[in-house]
Image (cartoon, rainbow, N blue to C red; front, side, top):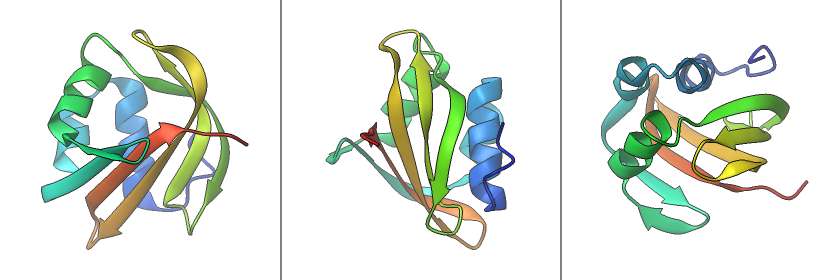
Length: 107
């Protein structure tokens, strides 16, 4: 499913999320990486705890990829929130994720 994602770090992050591999996910982030959810600054650690814990989030489809493979849009399933369209926008430096912005998408 992640074949359309051209950035290798972003592809690895989405693969880790979908496989519920928290160790692989965490290893992709730079120290001090920042996070926002629907435009609100938040805690990457709290997001990750939910996504890999009770929320068990995963993409069920990748609908489009933009910004040289850094922005991923698709259907997301969360055991906590159900199914919805979402975006994950990554900022990557030297192969490490420095920022992740997530939110509900309208496309």
